[in-house]
Length: 201
Image (tube, rainbow, N blue to C red):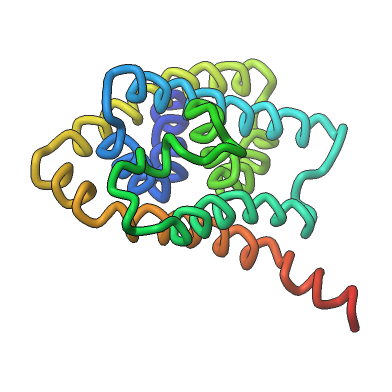
């Protein structure tokens, strides 16, 4: 039980930075179908992060290189495209529905989860190396169970009237800025910008 509690605490500690993104996504979702797609997308994205962690500790490949930061370009592109939209288009369905390059909401949420999961990966890899394979399997199961629970908590928060109204009022700026911020954080923390500059020096 102590081991499981440690795993739960590890999951929560690494998931704090996704709190705002999940609140925004759930508050912005228009119907039950979109809410379900946010859950599924987050589950897919975080499962992918766990798979990468397992591959990394198995010695097959390393995902800590500078160039993995290029993933940060995806949320930046999404955020910039939203900011460039015409404000006069009042019938625009919003960032979660209108970006043709990511036409599926589940896929878009999964992409954001993977990109934002760089911190999780940086923690999961050394954490998993300290465990036996039986404990790793238990950790994977625990994390997979925690993902929908974590989503459910922020779904409830995002459904609160005051938060819902705030997001609806400022989503035109708030959501793109958050997505761009995620991308910049990934680029800066992975030293990708320095690696690109080095190519031209």
